[in-house]
Length: 270
Image (cartoon, rainbow, N blue to C red; front, side, top):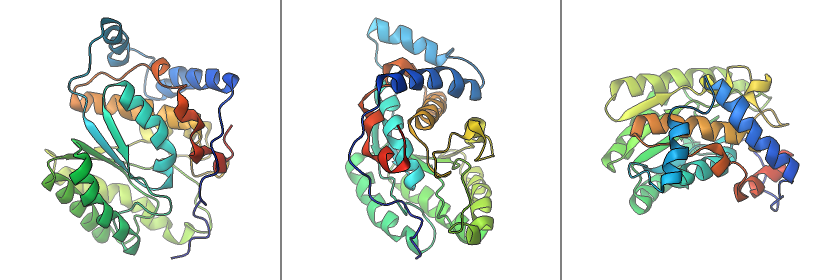
């Protein structure tokens, strides 16, 4: 497979400055939540009260996160948001892979059963990768296999659409396949309504990867800390609604040590 445009190995950790941290909280608390349709109210507001009372989210699930390098850049924030909400979290997102269709999926199918057996998730959240190539029938086969594998392990599957991203020379030959993947996944979710859920992240990002709302990094594909935090807030809120737990407010996790994760260095994030 041509790997010219696949991100290289992460560089050493780069801390976030205080001013950037303040901006991060503002971005999550205002811009990101506005994209979700409102300020920090409802479940998020209730979480502040629960925290003050010392209560715990006893329903918070164990979440296994899957996807490619885009999901990898979202993972530090998502892990922080879920852990602050009393959920357990593990990521198996893979740079240059992580998909469930074609030859590139072989490492996924090798690793997934091991993660399911050791981590024992309640929920597997799979973000559609930029490598879920193939005809719609092939894509559906991959998502069906994912649903069965996850279901056989006693977990539920949540499929999340990828954010809009730049279709560069590497992705251009697969543009039609990238476009058809969400519909293929949605078809599979519709067949397994009791165990598979489909979430369209366009509710957060929109469908234009160049728009400010999409919060892409300089490469037009991945996200920096603010975008990752906005995504984490959105997805944790959606999972909270599905699995009856209260998401922690952003000020409990948005400026934590995750903001200095080494994944952000190669992306030019500050």
